[in-house]
Length: 222
Ligand SMILES: Cc1cc2nc3c(=O)[nH]c(=O)nc-3n(C[C@H](O)[C@H](O)[C@H](O)COP(=O)(O)O)c2cc1C
Image (cartoon, rainbow, N blue to C red; front, side, top):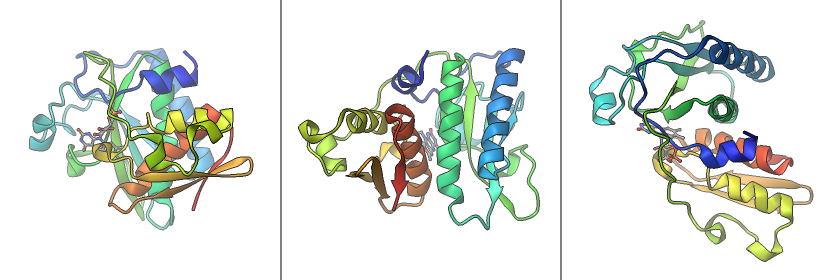
C-alpha cells in the first residue's frame, strides 16, 4: 500500500481484536518512531499490552474496546510548537501503521491521562495518545468540508500537486472532525492557517503531514 492509498483507507477505529501487535510490525513501528524522535526532538513511545490506560469511564463511553496498545506523543513543554509537532509526526506514524495493516484512533480526551504508562522526563508532557491495533472493523469515511470552504483556490485553478494535497487534507483526522483550517498556495508551497480551538494546533500538524505526503510539496504553517 502506498501513502496515498493509506490516507484514503485510514479511518478512526476504536474496537480492536484482543491480540498483541506482531513482533515484526512492532519493530517497524519502533523504527519509524525513532526516526520521528530524531527529527523532531520529541520522546514518542509505543506502549504495548497495557489494558489500564483505556480502562476509564470516558473510554468505555467512547466505545473503545481492547485498546491495549497506544502511541504516546510526549515532548518538552518548552517547545513552542509542541502540539503541531505531535500532530505532524503522529500522523506520519499513523499512516505507516495503516500500511503495516494496523488501525488507529487519535485520542486527546477518551483515555486515562494519569494511567498512561509512557515515560516522561522532567519538563515533558503527554500531548495526546493514538490507540493502535488490529481493528474489528476498518472504520468509516468522515464527512469532509467542501474544498471552497477551506481553500483559497477553485478546483479548476489548482495545479495537480496542490489538488492532490487538498484531497489528502480533507481526509485527515481532526478533533471531533472539526476541519478548522484554511489552505492557500504560495508559489511551489502551500500555506496553512489553523482555526481557534484547544486542539487546533495538533490538527494543523496532522493536516500538514497529509498534504505534504500526498503532494510532495511543503505545507507551511502561518
Ligand atoms: C487531536 C485529536 C483528538 C481526538 N480525540 C478523540 C477522543 O478523545 N475520543 C475519540 O473517540 N476520538 C477522538 N479523535 C478522533 C476524531 O473524532 C476523528 O479523527 C474524526 O471524527 C474524524 O474521523 P476519522 O478519523 O474516522 O477520519 C481525535 C482526533 C484528533 C485528530
